[in-house]
Length: 306
Image (cartoon, rainbow, N blue to C red; front, side, top):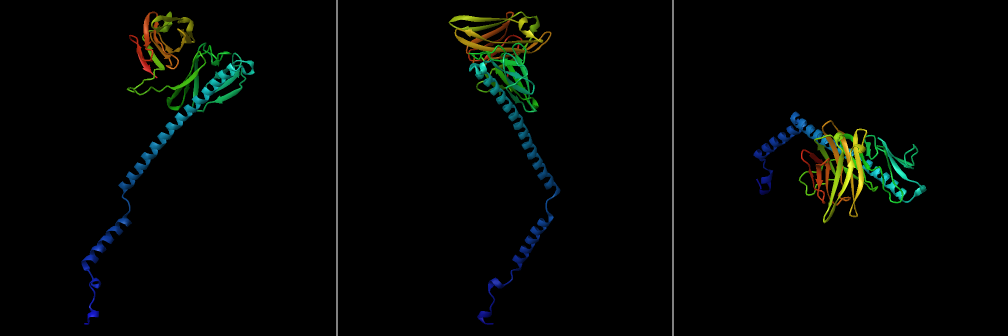
């Protein structure tokens, strides 16, 4: 055999390599034909369902929050618009907002007569409830200064129980806040809305006293006749108290007056109040505030902050 006829090393069959390659090819071919096991399919479907449920829950939460925020913003626009038009003497009239369960109606005059200048309809999932001085559904603003004698709160409730509270002060200013309690342990706790569980009934009470500290000046005392502020079975008082030239604005409203207990809310916005305050009923302290808004409940009074 000539040198040119000698086979090259690469041309000599390598049986060991060929056999291993065949086994490997058979193994992967078999797996490709076998597909996924039932357990693998179940796990994959479970993961997909879990992710989908999480996304749906997050979307539902966002939708509820969006509906409440949109309602709160729209209602605030109406209250502020009515006040601004009154101050500007537009149409030479007072302006106000009528609060219904499903809508807010902008009107002119001392009370709502059925004719609305404009209407803001709430989403189907949101309802409104007013708790105003005088017990009516209308917030009417005074000419020149834009104050109102029908201050109070409007609670917007959405699906799932979420709420937004609109507070209309005696000055005519309107603000909105969430009714959800702030996280405990946060650096600054917002005490704008405080709920007090009193161990006695306001039905048997005579005088509620607001005592504002203004050191070194004498205290400013505001006495409230309790029976005269109870209407329809509920207590409601809102007003502005002048403390040495600084207006302190408060709203006090009951949620329930029982035979021996009372659920009372106090609205004290720190942007509207800068004096220390003690509130008592017939000499029994129910709550006290520092000038910066830190509060303490009286003996036997349970306080929750919202």
